[in-house]
Image (cartoon, rainbow, N blue to C red; front, side, top):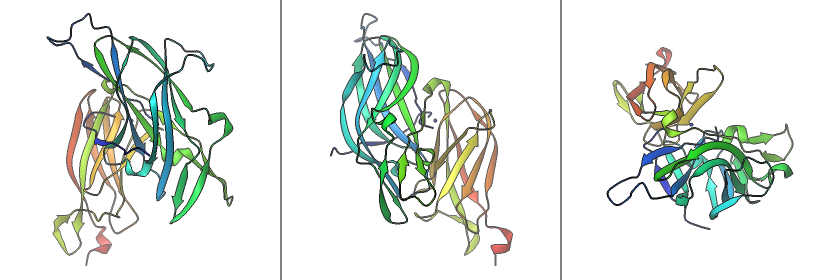
Amino acid sequence: MKTLKRFKLFFPALILLFFFGCNDSNSPSQTDAENISRLTVRLVDEPGDFDNVFIEILDFMIKINDDSDDDSGWQSLGEINQTVDLLELTGGESILLVDAFELPPGMLSQVRLVLGENNTIVIDGDEFPLKTPSAQQSGLKLKVNHELEPGFTYSLLLDFDVDKSIVIAGNSPNKILKPVMRASTIYASGKIQGTVTLQDPDNIEEAITPPSDFQIEASVVLADGVTTISAFADESGVFVLHGVPAGTYDVTITPEESDYAIAVVEGVVVVNGEINDIGTVELQLNPGSIT
C-alpha cells in the first residue's frame, strides 16, 4: 500500500467535484514552443455521517479528444493502488493522486476513477464490506470537456460526496458503494474558508476551540436552491468550502446536537479564483443553557 500524500488546499474548490486551475507556465526557460500540458489530480471529500469510509483506488484514466462511450482510447496516468479513508479529507485536506502528468494539448473529454474491491465502511465501530454495482466495476466515468492548452498546468479536483455515495437498504446487511462526484474549473469558482470557535460555558465572555470529537458543518446553498456545498471543520475549527461559483451567499454553521445554536454569516461574496476568508465565527450557547 502506498503512503498517502495529503495537502492543505489554498485554492478554490466543489459533489464528486473537479477543479481545473490554469497557471501560465511561460517563463524565460519555457517558451511558447513548448507543446505539452500538465495535469495534477487531487481527491477531496464531502461530509458523511460514518466513522470511516475506506475506498481502494487502483488507477486514474483519461480520454483526450474522444467523447465516445466505448472502452477504447482510455489512457492511464499511472497505477495508484492506494486505500483512502474519505472521512479524513475534511477541513481543506486533499490527497494527491496524479502529480503534473505531461500530456499533449487537446480536449480533456472524459476521466475515469478505477476502484478496487477492497472497500469498507465503519458504522458505530462495526466494519462492513461495501459492494459495488457491476455497472460501475469498470470505474466511475465523468465527462469533463475542458481544453488543455500548451504551456499550462491544470489541477483537477475530484470531490467525492461520501454521504450520497453510500446506499443502505433498510435493515439489509448490504452496504452499497455508488460513487457520486462533480467537477468545476478553478477559475470558474472560488473558495470560502473560516474558523469556528465555541462560547466558553464556564466564561461566556471567552471563546474556546471545539473539542476534537465535536462535529461542526459549514454549508452554502447554490443559486439553483437545491445544490449544497458543505464541509466539516477540522480539529482546529477550520473549514474550507471548495468550488463555490461566483456570487453572494449566506454561510450556515451547524454544530452537532448540543447546547450551541446554529450561526449564519450573511452576504459572503465569492469571486472566481479567489479565497474569501470570513475569519472567526463564534457559536453561541442557546439562552436556556447558560447558567
